[in-house]
Length: 347
Image 1 (tube, rainbow, N blue to C red):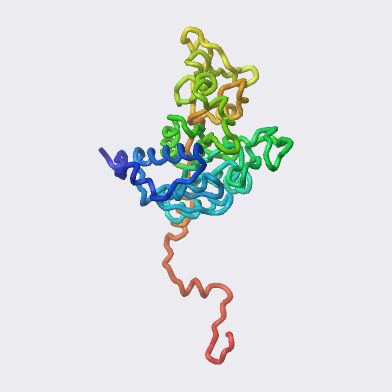
Image 2: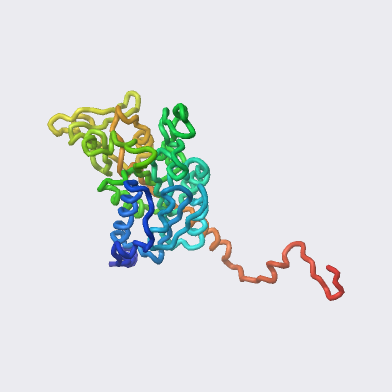
């Protein structure tokens, strides 16, 4: 095995190494419990090292996450987790940085920060818990709440058109976009794929708020609905659902996606397309599919790496240092300076 193919040593841990002694405090039945356990189970499998891992959160129910991970962590202020994460990664690129956020935290006051982190392509994982409501502040409607949502801040129903987190991420220049469900067995697969991606990896997780927005995703998350309402995407595999009896095709006349019937398992004859995680145009279409007419697109939707922000910044710094010797006195004396003599006057 040559130097190029050597695999870096993996940390050997168990789930117990990732659990803190803090009492986990979310509402009974909250989807956050399932996400926490999925992350804790995934960490040993990807060989992550608790001593080199940081969880950064903003404000919201999901933002209690760092307290429950036996790693370094920052519980920051509303919407500013991306700014703190950027500083961390620039200071120490060797750290594994995970951002934990919610639909309100990331897409309202934090929308500007989220956009710039994604376009800059900081090497980190962003887990956005989407429950389509403000849970911590007692049930007001959020940027992802559906039209007609009744809440303390919209007693007659929301008239806002909801934001799509994955469409927002793609529009901001994200190079990795995935979707999953809090209690689904596939969630660890999306977490592993996000970790393997070098760059900003954005994962939207549909999360059930048991108190203020209970079962809002039941139409596609409940087991009885799953087969015909979930489209699990896998790179290089045909886009099939309903037990392989239906699939997604691309209409070349108007460049739109369409549901087709698959007869006898012959998906090629039905024109079902194969998922290509590097196809950005189809990724845009998949995240915008209207649920009801189409199944919910889940899994890794887009994955096409490019150079990261911190690599570019650090390369620039190293290039600027070439041929120069550190001289603090010369630096502080540069430009307009004053020397205070013993007579008390500046010269």
